[in-house]
Image 1: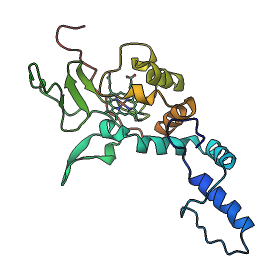
Image 2: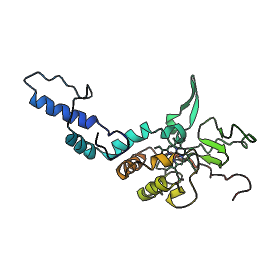
Image 3: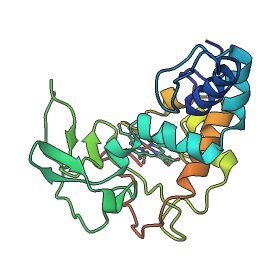
Length: 210
Ligand code: HEC
């Protein structure tokens, strides 16, 4: 399947376009295809064109939803089956109001890391990392970021694209394998989120390390 990304292409428009073409040629045969129904065999060129024409924000939404950004960047609250994302604070990062005591001492392992109940703060050999506020809030979110910075950060694993290393468990190594269009689409979608004011604490290196 032709795709510039490592992920399967986002298909709904291609499906609808393919269905429309098939319906046009097979009208007499009584084409029953419905948008969103069974996927007809659409030709590769049509699919590529439709995918490229797709609104980047819609593609970014699709990628963010599928790539689990919420798992770490949306504060979780207790639910009947364990922690569940608090969608009112979607992608706003570790809540500033949740003050955490020092993480438990785990000694030499084999357990080496701890996670806060919100699933937004992580302590381990790398220190304490807090999931960032990805909403476009003017002073506490990603507003100061440029698209270029975002691409650089995902590709190099450097905070804001140039400074300290980005810490676990942010999967930048894998997201950095997306093509430019997909990363730009993710950034474009993040820009459309409702801005949420939340100043995430600074990353804290392990004791004794500056
Ligand atoms: C497994 C948890 C996890 C997942 C999944 C995750 N993140 Fe992160 N992310 C983090 C943590 C923790 C940090 C803070 C790291 C630090 O301070 O060094 C972070 C930091 C970031 C940053 C700031 C990087 C910087 O330069 O400081 C951006 C941007 C980001 N994540 C975007 C995303 C996007 C977009 C997704 C989904 C495609 C995502 N993250 C998925 C945990 C995660």
